[in-house]
Image (cartoon, rainbow, N blue to C red; front, side, top):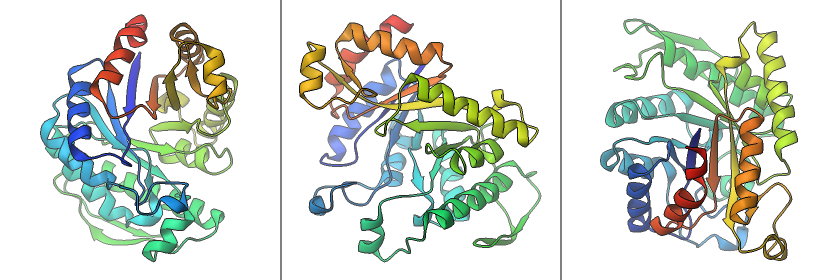
Length: 303
């Protein structure tokens, strides 16, 4: 079973991220992720809080880690031209020796779009843009090495564009689509993605995970694609408590991975039984000792 960690970009510093990432790289973790916001997300009053840019952090980790896969969960499609993003990811693929995953999402935080002067179109247009960007990036990632790509979409265009050097990862850099929307986001993943990731900061749970996986499978069938080609992952807010009552008192939602060690072990086991291939945990402090406890008391059960 694979486990990954989404570290915080916010209210932290490079030294804490560096130390924690090196500890994860030396441990049983499969992947390390950051998010893609330019101010602490979801809290407009915290605009002056420290917020480190996710792709820059990946570049730093590319130089100092050796084993874990790296990605942004998930890159807001509205922030960067998709061809530029493909080039960034391809460069880091070479720097890491083939450990990059390209995570994409439609973007949602209107406040930072306003702050930095980026257009924030309707949800429909953002969904349209995400689908088109994913198609474009997949063409660049999968083309023969000596060919150019032209693309004439509604929002994005390429004319005889190369992607060189090509990916070191075979058959190509995986594309993860982050988001829970059944009609558009999960359909885009089934069409052109390689990994789906459900974010259960939002209402969810094992039954919801099963349902969303079935939705992806049905979308795959509509594209004559084997559902097994799409890896199933989930991201869970995580915190260990001495008692489950304490977790509830601190604001745990039923779908959070908040509870005692035994409760968390059972809860994660439910996701594994439901077909999750990798479980990512988030909201753990950027401290090596916090993750060491998780390794010893939680992950060791799933070796």
